[in-house]
Amino acid sequence: MSEEYKRILEAQLWNIANTLRGKMNADEFRDYILGFIFYKYLSEKMNIFADEILKQDGIKFKDITPKTENGAAFIEAIKEEALEKLGYFLRPEELFTEVAKRGKGDNEEDGQNFDESKTNFILEDLQKILINIQLSTMGTESEEDYENLFEDMDLNSSKLGKTPEARNAIIAKVLTHLDKIDFKLNDLNEVDVLGDAYEYLIGQFASGAGKKAGEFYTPQQVSSILAKLVTTGKQKLKSVYDPTCGSGSLLLRVAREVEDVSNFYGQEMNRTTYNLARMNMILHGVHYRQFDIKQDDTLEHPQHIDKQFEAIVANPPFSAQWSANPLFTSDDRFSQYGRLAPSSKADFAFVQHMIYHLADNGTMAIVLPHGALFRGGAEQHIRKYLIENKNFLDAVIGLPANIFYGTSIPTCILVFKKCRENPDDILFIDASQHFEKVKTQNVLRKQDIDLIVETYRNRTETPKYSKKATLEEIAKNDYNLNIPRYVDTFEAEENIDIEAIAQEIKALDETMATTDKTIATFCAELNISTPF
Image 1: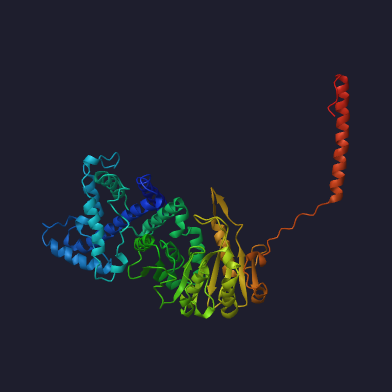
Image 2: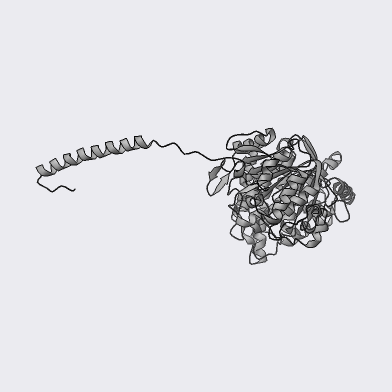
């Protein structure tokens, strides 16, 4: 049932999202629709939680009003419990369903042909409720996790409509459509379906957002590879960390590969994407005490500097600029290398940052542009230090071009471990030709992903696909990690038999001469000149 329900839910949510399409661009209506889905999720969780507490009293949470006997006492008791267990609180009248019903007014149940004059004005109430969710956490453990979570949902924006009435009508319509969808949060068999649908929407917005998509989303096929690489040999993880976590999808993907992840850590520079990551965590059922997502520039202002992590994954912005401030030469993340990554290309600055945070028993995997494998100068110096002095590099994996949103450049994955089981060689995998072309995008199929992961885990050498290179061989190549230097993909051309071709040409000449004589005979009989 889960797969069928998942498909239905995805279609329903995307259709609702399209209600806002045309009024604003993809990344703007993304923030509204994902925000409303999150508000509905929080409401349903709150309602289920409160109803369970009230079951012995024989009343429903949504039915409690100021006139309800002991209503205020019930509300206060539930609030205290909710802030401890859920991390937030909503009053009965603030629940999504109640607001949606108020907004719909006298419009039809199906939500079609919304008449502005029939809706009730709910914008002010709705904006207050979204603020109240945050305010309910003030002074509690979950305060930071909910702070300014809905700040990108400006219900008074002219992008929603020119007049307050027009804006109210479109919001009421969206809420009415969403209200009809059952998220099935009580059904343990469907526990991950809403989270999957949320991920689906994020992916849909990414595919329509062009270059901007790279800011918040790693394609699931790449996320899956990274997650499988860093969980090799593990059933449980104490911690997973992503220093450029975007919408948090990569962190959540790692959790799918093991039985349990105790704690999730991440940092994201973009404020809107940071909000999306926190929503994504909560919506996937990650308790507020289990995740610690910070907002700031990871290289310039790291927020988890005192921690080490068992698994680290990242898809940082390719060849981004950073300050490369000389003061960083005394920063523990960079000081031992003797060189800083160039200011025009922060790729190896991210590598150094991640290695600093990697636990001795941990594995990290990072996506980089191909240039990071062979560029000279400081980057070559850092590569040499990582291989010769530390011997942390475990594998280099070449991916196909054009698999990321917004860029067609070929990319690679570098895998690092501080305690390597195979310290005498580095595994090179050339997966650049293993993909399927879908429209304008190249896509890694399941068999392509499985081949990469199995080759890495078994350290298999396959002609024209994978090769274990010794450290001496890499040193001879001046620490140039360009994959074709190690994986020979050369296809020898078929031998040509010149004598046989000469005989074929001779035979063709004889055939043509015979044909010319036949044509000349016909022309003479018809009393016309020959064409040659």
